[in-house]
Length: 465
Image 1 (cartoon, one colour):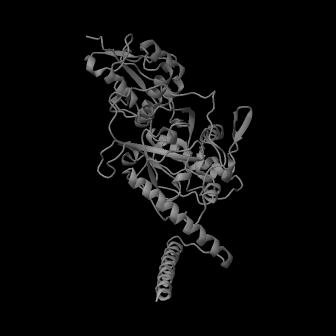
Image 2: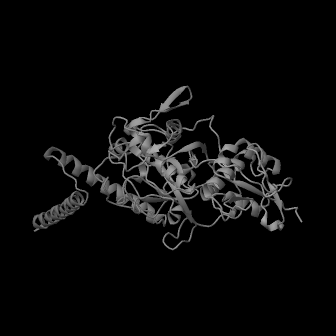
Image 3: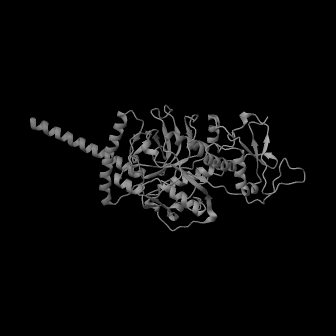
């Protein structure tokens, strides 16, 4: 009788094992269908073994998240048949992100009145999620996303830019600790190198004219197809509050992160500790505070990835704010370059000029007009107030920038691009402290630009009565 009982128990255990295997096989076949995975007969066994191993990893990650009452979720996605080493080699950057010690770092911005949440997607500054495929070109997607946003915020139409242009043509290098760190197409690269290439190249082609192929190719850049230009770039402070301030004031930010733990991310706020291997280029497009409707546990960054819209939160990952190792080491952003008008030049006429007289090309009028102090956001002597700093930190918005007004065709007509160029220049150069004489000197230095665009400044003097 005892042998019968033992045999029955062994049979039940065997049946349970068979049932478990059947479930895994069913999951694997569903995975194959959903992500169009096709294997040779020799590959199947290896991929299935990796898949089963990853199911255990996913289960462990979800158990850990549950124990911490975290909202982050992991599960089967398009990377579930890859080992961690295969995932890293195929989708992450073999060129480790480094920070150029000689490059500029943006001045700190006021943070007293930052919004609790902000998202550039809702303001039209972000293109759709893209897919880098099996090419380590994440750096190029982070770069184009950054430049796309900057170009849009400079008053241009949101335009998709060509990652393939960078993959094929950009071989710029950065000197770091005696070595050259270079852009290498599908073998990796750095966003600052890419900015340098775009500046030297005179621009970057549109995505439509130079579509993505996901492989290294021959450079086919055409100047006639340029979609955007930049004139400079800067690093942003690694302080996360400053990052938020700069993002709100200046648009999406390119960053590098250690992304190996993102392989099975499905959604929620990613709050898993990050490593120090900065192997993936991404784009911060916004942030949110804690106790939001969908993710109540933590404040987070909204990060655009380049693994397609089926990955994560429709192509995005929400990274816990304060998890500084993940997002704050190599944050950078470019400055858009203005496209000057080709309209014929016209001599400007001052409101103080007598009838029949015109100002010479070397003379500039900045008229003092009566205004209340609350309408002015420049002072010649004292530092700016918190309110004034807040307005200047949002200098791309013509409604927020009241220290200068452009006059065109005898009407007050704010021009976003020209305002942005002026404001960004003064903010960077003078760190919020400049007076009327500096304004005059700036206009003299850039007189050809203002003459071509038939622009004249009016100076708002808070002391005028």
